[in-house]
Length: 252
Image (cartoon, rainbow, N blue to C red; front, side):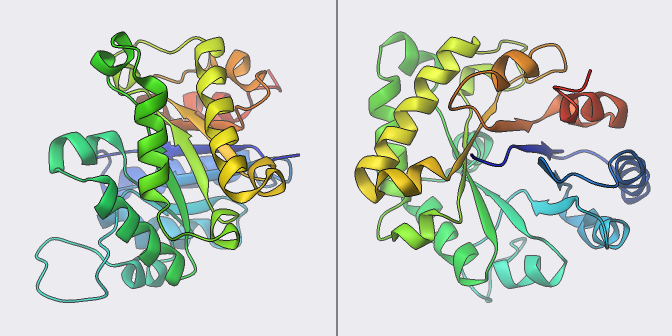
């Protein structure tokens, strides 16, 4: 059985004191999380401070992005080695906002993934279609292309270290959410792609998260689906009480 994961992507929100207060509150509420993984992905500025709070805690630290190069003249970028040094365990790669606003491609996503793995970090690979692509009935072809190109030259042992996050672009920050059935359909397709490429055993062990306007009132229905193993939460992760209720999706 796949271990569920609830991950918070704070995007460009929270000062260091705000991030620290949130991390302390969550740590106090969830001193043990044996049956699910919790990940916080604060902005770069707060990584070290949040890492210090989460030390000796079951809650994991994640980063929102990474550069594929080890070092060099890349103003404003952060390497995987730097993220590991700051205490990160997970790295979000290929988020739709990185693709649409900052020009990331499947090729650059692949390079970032390789760097993340090479530094013993765990990638959360984001994939998803736009509203136009869904209306043109191209969801599955878009997802297949994103998956195959992002995983170019990846081995089965590499893939077992991945978490995937299906985030339909039309549902991110819009208040719209794919129905549980719509999300399940795509999650099952992703798992089949992985099974065809890397074997059913590897595919069955991989967590596939849903992201896109996840809230406390829809998380339980999403998690009831066979191939939805957790959530990558955006706006609803900014309030500790709200995010806590999402983490407790089956304990209400």
